[in-house]
Each structure stands twice: as C-alpha cells, then as structure tokens.
Image 1 (cartoon, helix red, strand yellow):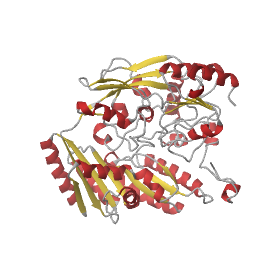
Image 2 (tube, one colour):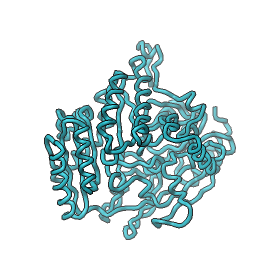
Image 3 (cartoon, one colour):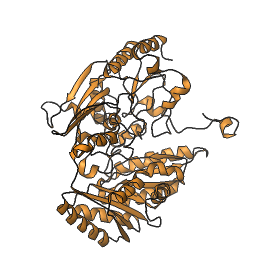
Image 4 (cartoon, one colour):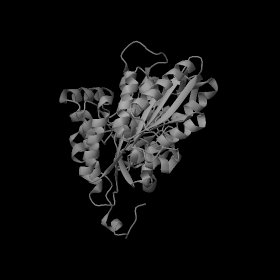
Length: 484
C-alpha cells in the first residue's frame, strides 16, 4: 500500500480534485485498450501543468514509489497498465494547444491534446497532422509519442517519430529537460529519437512540438475486392513494384469486412474474400495518372470489383468502415487480443495462411485488418473469456502470431508498442547483448527503474507473473455475484 505520507504530499501538490484515491474510481484506470490485462493503481494523479508533473515525480522519488504515465488509455499493448503499488499519472487535463506557427508549419501542444484536434485546429491554414491512428478522435499525442503510433497513412508519411521535432520531458527524478528543437535536424545526439517510442519508460512528456503538412491538392480513393487476402497481396506488390507510393494501402479479410459492414454500413461487399483500400494524394495531374495505373494493376491482379470513392463524403464513409474495425469486433466476440507484427510485403499471403492454420489448431477465429502497404499486420484473436480455457488459448495464439512475424523476417510491433503484452517475446527478436544495451539506455534516464516498470524489456518478475486475461470468480460464473 502506498504510504499515507505520499498521499498527503500529492494532495498538497494537486488538491483533492487532482488525486483519485477511492478504489472504485481507481478501477476506471485498471486497463488500457488491451483490456485482457488489468491492474488497479494505488493512486491516480491528474496534473494540470508541467510543474505539477515535476512535483509529483519528485514526491514519488522521495517515497520510492513507481510511476506509470497514461494518455487517453487507447493503447493496445498494455503499455499503460498501472502498477498496483504505484502512482498512475494521467495526462488528460493537459490538453492545451500552446502555439501554432502556420508559416513554419509547426504546432506546440500539451500531451493530452487528441490527435484529430490538431488537424482541426490548423485546418484554416490548409495544414494537417499526418499520422492518423484509427483511434485518432480520442487518442492523445502524448500516447502517440510513447508508442510511436502510425495509422493508415504511415506508408507515405511515416510514423509519429517523423513528425515530432522537440519535447519537454520530466525525468523520473523530477528534473525537466528539453529534447530536440523546432528545427528539422538539430546537432548533437538524437535524444528525441530515443524518447519517441520509449513507451513511458524514460519519463513523462509535458510539451511537444510537431511538424504539420500542407493538405494535398487531390485525393483519390478506391476499394478493390479480391477472392482472398493472398490475391489482394499480389496487387499490393504490383502497386509498389510499379513505383507508386500510395498514401495508404489497407486490407481487410472477409471476417473483418463482415464486422465492419454491420457496424458502419460503409458499402463493403460482405461476400468478398478480401478488400483493399488504396488512397493516393498529391498534385492533381500526378495523382490522377497514378490512380489510373493503380486501378489497372488491381484489375490485372484479379480484382473482382472496384469501387471508386468519387467525393469526400463517400471517401469518409470508406474510412469510417475501416477505422471501425477494432470496435466492430465486439459484434463477433466479447473479447479479443490484437497484434501488430510486421512482415515483408512479399510474404503476406504465406503469413496469413499460416495464421489461419494456427487459429484452426487453437479452435479460435482470427480477423485480419491491417496496413498492407508496409506489411503491418493487425490479427485480432477473438474469444470469450466466459468460456473456461478460451482466454488462455487466445493469449497463447496471440503471442505465437507475434513471434511468427519475427520468424518471417519481420518485427514484433509496428505501432502498438511492446508494453506488457509482448515483453516476454522480445528475446525472439533481440539477443541478450541487444537487450542489455536497451536496458542501459533506460537506466541512463531512470537508474532506479521506477518509471513504467515491467514494460518493454523482459524481466523474471514480468515473465514469471505475467498478468493474463481476466478470469471470472466461480461465484461470478455461477451468477451469484457480478463484476462492477
């Protein structure tokens, strides 16, 4: 239990309105978007300023208590899973846009600003923020930075790291430092690059300078149906081999199409084996020529039907359907694990076939919806935790799929991060020396290991006591009690 002295210190810093102590309210924060892993924090801090964050960090140092930063809680790797004996620092109240510089295409924000809010704030200047995770209307920039989030348009425009120029960071001991700058390539070591994607293990970000882009002159979008994901994969390879760089190339298999269409009514063909969403943007003449070639390549690759989204409303509907995918899985099963391993594009069909075999062996369904252009898979392992043993089978299958991506020459994660979910799989991708170097980098920022402990790197405690799927109490299963 957290010392009462720490609670009093935090009350002095944040006030009663800024500290959550009651158990039922703390349970609100017990999980992020990967809800299979749960842990109730000892205390929840709600800072309103960078000074608040620094003071909270110093108080936790004095009392030797671990801290876990949290953004909007939409992460999908249990990266914001609270420590049961620690303080969860929730950044949702730090949501101010501090400065907009349209001439230099820059914006300075606090970490609680939502991804989509940035594009809204700069739309009058014909600018936008390129990274667009599916949860962009609710996910926060601080969380995007922690996980190096991407989204559908990462094929052409890259991930969060390509758009973060500088940060204000509160170190685990409470010291505030500046990393990076508003310039594109400042001299010195790229500590900004070290920070982006570090999953809250190096400190708490309190201010971020982002790069903005001009809105493209033209945008063209199509949906191509195929008999199978393997056939759609042939089209993806053909498009890339032709030298075309789409803004986005997304794929959904039949199971994902059914769920998305039922949820969003976006006009997808539920009988299709796979749907490929391809979007191109840029100067109008260039975009039109590349789009015509893309249509031809899809047809040559065996597309059974092509739908062109001719106006902004239809284009928005297509993307509404695609971005509804994860939430729509609730129509197929009450629970799921999601992975985001990366494989070479040329092995899409082979890998998806192997995932289907593994799912059949585990007697589970797997829906696939993913960023096909850069081989970033998002297999969703569907299960029902009320069925004895099903959660464990799903967790095991999910881990095996992540490790399969490494076996195919890829990576454990493309944009969701490692968190708790994949930490024990890290040795399948990295050797002992690699992991030791990562640990030394982490220790340079946080020698005591108190900042988001038991995440990213495998540890004996984590891998021996890894929190698994929620398992109902026998009385709950019998209907005698219910879970609040």
